[in-house]
Image 1 (cartoon, rainbow, N blue to C red):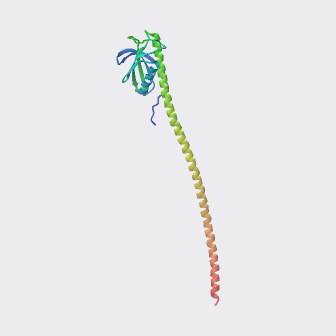
Image 2: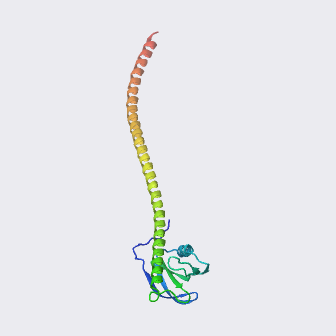
Image 3: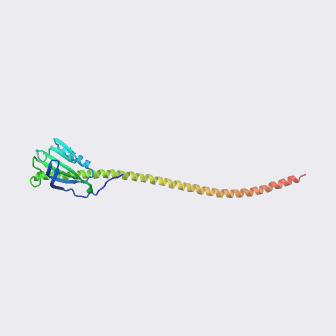
Length: 213
């Protein structure tokens, strides 16, 4: 089984900056998700946006746009969310860039502290949840393989024990056969002597018989 593993020791950090999206460059937040499967991260992000609720979503390759996302715990005013996904292959991770349009003005730490902190927390929790679930799935799959290997080892050890017992039985049979051969040789020699003696008896009686005229 081929699998990709990585040390999940990185701290999840959300960074602010300007990024390019399908409709231009905007202030955004970025976070690395420690998963080397782009489609999985995209699927999880769509699912998260769906949990918040939105009116429309459009798929533009590595860009996903969501219209009128309802972050109700933050505000009753919906936002448009523009997302881009970059594969960071040397780190086996996916970098998620998200820009939150409040209606012509994009969420930033300098102008919208409450909204910024909300989005920062949301994106960090998204990365943690998605990364951990991915590693947990890898752990489950790897553990299944380990258990299968361990079961196979037990079967091999059982077979080996059976073969050892067979060898012991064969050795016992060989030893018994060797002892029987030695005994048989002695019995043959003893029988030869008995035959020689009996032959002499027969020859003597024959001579005696021939002497009677």
